[in-house]
Amino acid sequence: MEQIVTDRDLVENSLNGSRQDFEILVKRYSKKLYLFIFNRTGNREDTEDIIQETFLKVYKNLSGYDPKWNFSTWIYTIAMRISVSHFRYTNVRERKPIFPLSPTTESPEEKMIKNDVSSIWEAADKLGTVKYEVIRLRYGDGLTIKEIVKITGKTSVNIRVILYRAKNELIRIMNRTVEPGMPLQKYPEKSMTLGVKK
Image (cartoon, rainbow, N blue to C red; front, side, top):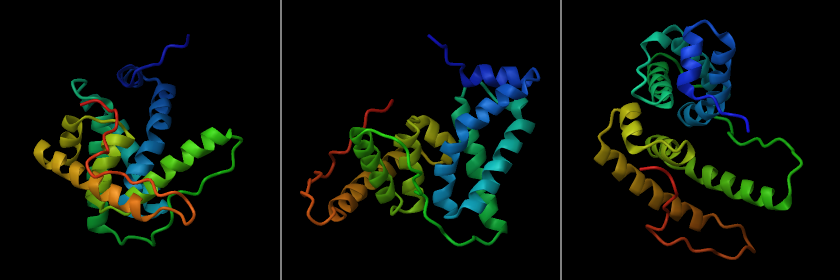
């Protein structure tokens, strides 16, 4: 069985001169960062600029990474700060859709699951930026409340309130956006609890 290399091992190897290990980190976090940042920018060009700047900053400051935090917390914090300063100093380009799905060979069951997940994130995209970011970090990336506090600079109480409101708003959106002819599956308020770590 192939052993998965941890982020910390990859950071340590990168600090010892392994470019290949840093490239693995880039591949591991590129898509996650894209989904996280796109909601702020609304377009590919700005998102890609911010991701590139994030990885450049991570590479230059790798020796300053504190292993007491998960690497994901550190890289999201950097990406968040760069995206905030990006909006301070640049004009935002036109918003484009985030979900162009490429054709793949999938079983009907896989397609159904993928469509359900896609429709949930498309609905989440209708939430405000802050709610989307928090719900994406919590349920999309499985980060803890403590990690989200570190990334966003908000209090844990504030994060819990945002999550509570975002989940209820998402349920309302999902209940409104059922396709014609499809049976209406009522999602009860307060029922959205996903299995992620506390």
